[in-house]
Length: 188
Image 1 (cartoon, one colour):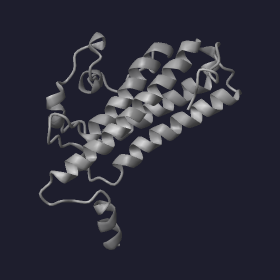
Image 2: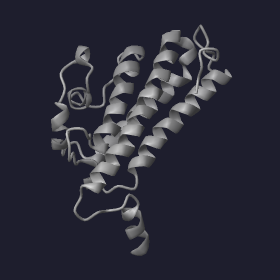
Image 3: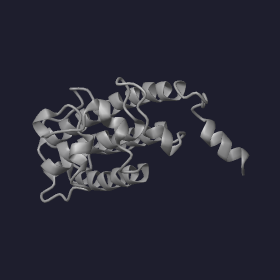
Image 4: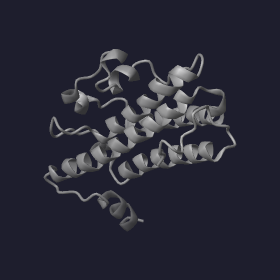
């Protein structure tokens, strides 16, 4: 975590402990989101059994959309977006940033497939690594947005955990969270 006392008032030097810590924290937070979804089958990541639940695939894509929209498009000149329709598909309540799929309809998004969402994450993460490497060239507001983005993704990790529990609990087959991994190991 970063506190107001640890945050620099000017853009940090790329060799500074703040930069190294921010970069490592970014990687760890992003990896945790994937780790939460890893035990699921791809089919588990699309369902939305309640209006209060968002599909895990949507969470993975939405948090990636945040990085692309709030940082890369703002701080990387001529940044090539991964897919032009993802802004509509994965925006949530940021009305000033454009229209979006209604929350109740997130479970209808059978496309893009989960594999494409993982490719989207890898694409954005690669561009974020470049941005983080030149953080010292950017205004201090970039580091603040990165910190905000980390908290945003961690909030979605909490939502992911509760949404996954709800999704699995409403399935009549009563699958366990680690069941797909256990089945794969027992079939080897």
